[in-house]
Length: 100
Image (cartoon, rainbow, N blue to C red; front, side, top):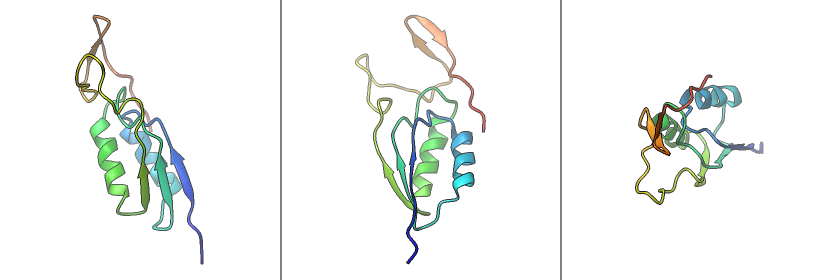
């Protein structure tokens, strides 16, 4: 019997295009296990797209999603990393762009 691969993926940070390119490159099968090391959201332009891809991958292969430090709330209230801009130390900033 053929064994599947165990592939660790970390620090996607809302870069759905980069995650999609990685998934295409590794082409996971039903025998594979993808271990996501957290940090799906925050910084990148498409946190929702990243989460949708991780959920959809569970239909293709085994997915082990671990929590990262960006998955918890901050001490100042609920985080909203999917917003196009945020305020940090009183300054407004836009998240960096992500490429494939």
